[in-house]
Image (cartoon, rainbow, N blue to C red; front, side):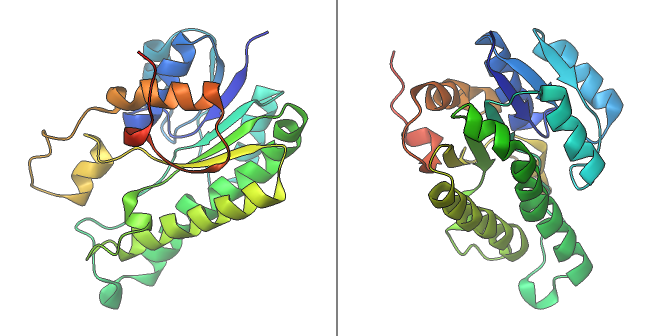
Length: 226
């Protein structure tokens, strides 16, 4: 029987790369994105045994639909996220409504989805992955909204890891990648020197198969067998 993974934000960038890698490794996938057309195109690219559930991760009914479509869950990858305003404002002038949305998408929604998936993850000794960033641990100027939200999901991840000993919990920093979100963070700049998301897939696949103890993981530091 194939292991089952839910991957959010899978229509492009890192989410699409991770979904493609797990599909090639024999996983059954449930994937989401906000735009149905983009998600349909992504499913064609991913291939394999994959179910698309378009919707907004902030919506409870959508989160429930993801878990229902998966049935049993071996892996939840909370990848969906937003940067916030671009260019990013300082915290002194950060629009609070925009900041609420950043926290809703990057902190509350992934926690809410994890709450729904945890009963199955416990039963199957599964794993929870929350995608994070070095902005969660480094005080970069202009990254106060996104960075503080990622810091919050990292701390939440660490607490879930303590509270759920039957589940592996990893908060995963993929590094700077050549994605649309990263381009939004640096409007007008050339980010072609950043590696493509596909480059971190071997490290991620090794993570979920080798199952190290719960904790913070930088994919660039993982030793992947040749």
